[in-house]
Image 1 (cartoon, rainbow, N blue to C red):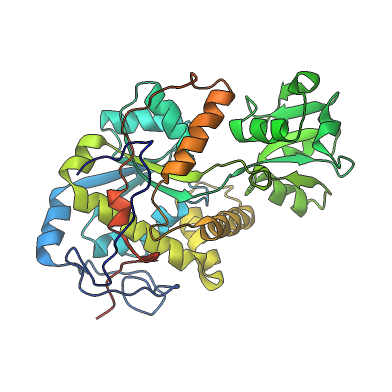
Image 2 (image 1 turned 45 degrees about the vertical axis):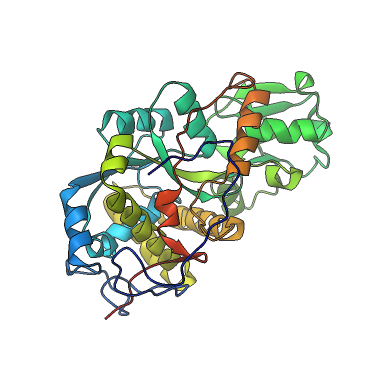
Length: 374
């Protein structure tokens, strides 16, 4: 398999309208049943849904250790993987998957994957992968679930134009992100006139007046403020033409090269679970899968809002016949954002680290190629 160069134009995909790669049959329903059939209950059987040869290949790959981006939060690339395991989808693909909680340091996740300590991991966005590659961490990017920005900016309702932030204080988590920087510049904001301060993850600093703007995640802080009935205005970088992404996954290059069907079917089961858990009737139950893995204090109600937001963003930003595939034009735009923000050197030549062939093997005309129930 040949990795795809970053700058190469997206090749036109010719998708066969037949089942391939040893799958028994295809079922492209928008709300797929669990591996056990249509009962809605998790599978308790290890019955394979693929042919014996492919099953043997996947079993020979050994344990696939998946490292989450942050604990068992109900985010895309976390909850869908947890659900795939609980619903028996990995069993149906003859995969032995062990899920371990990450601590939120996506660069550390990438290092663990490169070292072979983890097999596959969620690492945030395409830009997080780029920074890992630029830092000499050798991983293969195999998927991007969300093709839009997950970052956002919150202000009080008194701010009606972003230029009004000049002379005011903006709180961030450690640094002002590239997407938020690009949005502010696009709006004509002179950032030298904005006071930037590091704040924690408590969005209540905004209504308390400690800051007049706050960097946030679309699926997190807005839900907290709404729950507290705090009025605010959300400024979405996507509305300013800023390209972003989330739900990126990387794999150990040697493992991916030696076990292509295991990586393909890991993504297949994950995409199938994403479809299942995106249905309104299943969202609560899927979040409870994550709650069961977590220690006391898991906020199920908040995490349900996280999942609703992120799964909607994935669906609304899906493009082309292969929703999980990183897109060259998006990657190029994000490299430019990092260069403009001073995170990457201008004109940096990134090596070939993206391989969309794994995702391309999972979808037919935008739908998951999943075996139909017998």
